[in-house]
Image 1 (cartoon, helix red, strand yellow):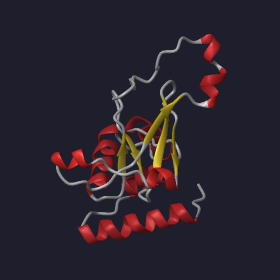
Image 2 (image 1 turned 30 degrees about the vertical axis):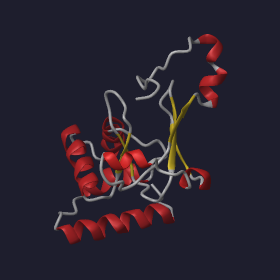
Image 3 (image 1 turned 45 degrees about the vertical axis):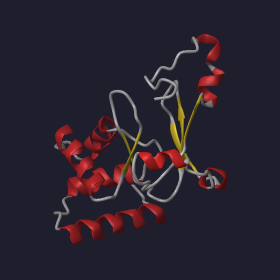
Image 4 (image 1 turned 180 degrees about the vertical axis):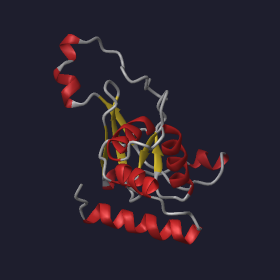
Amino acid sequence: MTDGPEILSRLARYQAVARAAGVKLTHQRLEIFREVASSLEHPDAEFVFRAVQTRLPTVSLDTVYRTLWLLHDLGLVSTLGPRRGSVRFDANLEPHHHYVCVRCGLARDFTSAECNDLRVPDILQEFGSIVTTHVEVRGVCGSCAANSAATPDIPKTGIPDGE
C-alpha cells in the first residue's frame, strides 16, 4: 500500500498524538488508523475489520472497535452519522461537509464556502455552546439514480429523512 502525502501527514499526526497521550503505538493500531485515514468511504468498524484482516489475519473485531473509539477519544477521527446499526469514522479533521446517499449509504466529503458561511440559529444557544458544525446533505447518488427504475423510492440504508 502506497500512502500519499495527505495520508502520511495523518499517520505522522497519529504517531505524535498517541505518543503525547502515552498510548502504545502497536502495528494493529497503526493499520486500523491507516485504513480509516486512506479511505474515502467513511468506513464503519466492520469494513475496517475486513480490510485490516487481509493484512493482519490475527486482528479481532473487538480490537478494531476499541481502537476506533480510542482514536476518536484522542481526536484523531470523527464519527459520521447517525446511521442505524453502525457508526462510520472519518480521519479527515479539516473543515468539510458530507454527502450521504440515502439508498446505498455512499458517503463523500465536500468543501463549500456557502456551507461554511451558514449562520447558526440563535435558538441553539438554549441547548449550550456550539463546538463545531458541519452540513450533511442526503440524497440519491448517481449510481442509485440510474437504477431507480428498478427499485422503489425507499431508503435502503436505514437513514430516514430528518434523522
